[in-house]
Image 1 (cartoon, rainbow, N blue to C red):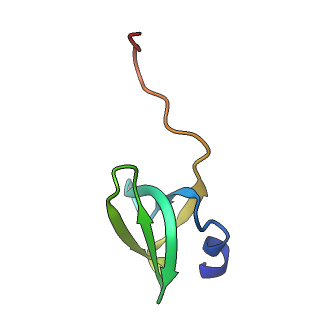
Image 2: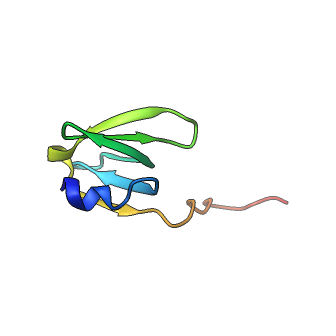
Length: 70
């Protein structure tokens, strides 16, 4: 997992680690089996590599649901 995830350093990814649990952020580093990510608000969080079920690169921000007022 570490080698595959390392290809996404500096990119925004979404990680799923069981059930409806998921996190999204920019992958900053991987140290001692733990990935460090930072979200859009600057919050840092950590995910153990052995808990990751799936991940993918986020290519664009989520589109808002409902009506958009201009």
